[in-house]
Image (tube, rainbow, N blue to C red; front, side, top):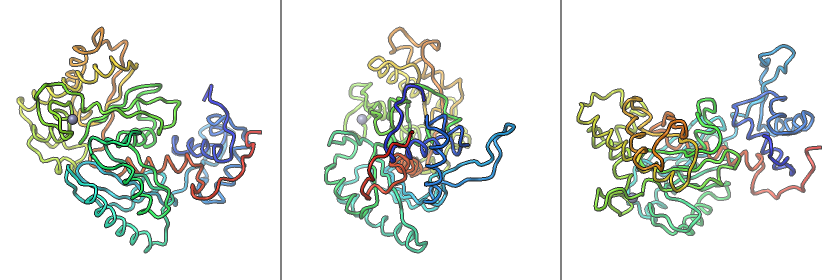
Length: 397
Ligand SMILES: [Zn+2]
């Protein structure tokens, strides 16, 4: 990428090559060299190393042009990684590969007011079941990621008002040395969309990624920055109505109280657990009347109002929405733009603000955390974070 400093250490060089493969779901050598700004010789050397370690594999597949390379390089499907999510009122554990395939999933229901001690008990139980599964197969998890809502750089979390230091200590001890990354749910969602289907992602450059699911949150995506540097913001807890509907954060009138999946499931008369079960097609299976449709449009209007306010504080050229609103017709989604028109300074102008919608993948937890784990694995260059870092080498000669 133009303007990016050339990588230097062995770890960094391996990381850029691996990230290119993760982003593109496999690539040919010249393409990798172009994208990583490494020479083809360097790329070949690194790939040989990664292939010996079983991290990448090459598939015979000619490039779609004459005289091009004949081997497509992909990430190995044999690196077990774990995704763990606290979302949708459940704790989900999953094991899968760097391609995002889940081979093992366990989900246990949790209370929205989950206490830290109860979380720890459930976590230990789920972990024991997962360990049995990995032991039977003789595999060892190389990287784990855990995502939870409200998590940030501060040691406070309004959604789960726990002791975050104790949480990190507990997780490190429970996972017994397996490299673990902890992140905010919306960052894991951003990683999921960045790496699961690159071609389907509608925005390039800096933009606001908005996730409207069980929770409502946003993240400012800076395309040239690593994902863990993105700042999540709790758009869902913007108070839009004084004394309004009660929110799980304890306040009244938050955007989330009107636009979360739970709020929507009430309108359409389908329990949220059923919505999660049906996944992205849940809306197709419904026959809601004009009244319900009107109410959903009102909620979208509020979402637009909140988004416009957020953009007044932090202007960005485009917004990508992932969540139930993406499943409604373009006609209904106009309500979001109407809401924005009433709050955004200067009004909503499609010439100045791009807005696009992507499929939310409802009920697929812990797949987002799994993608985040894949990302963390490649960011570490596929090197075991526990092993001592080898001396720096000039790889880009
Ligand atoms: Zn709230």
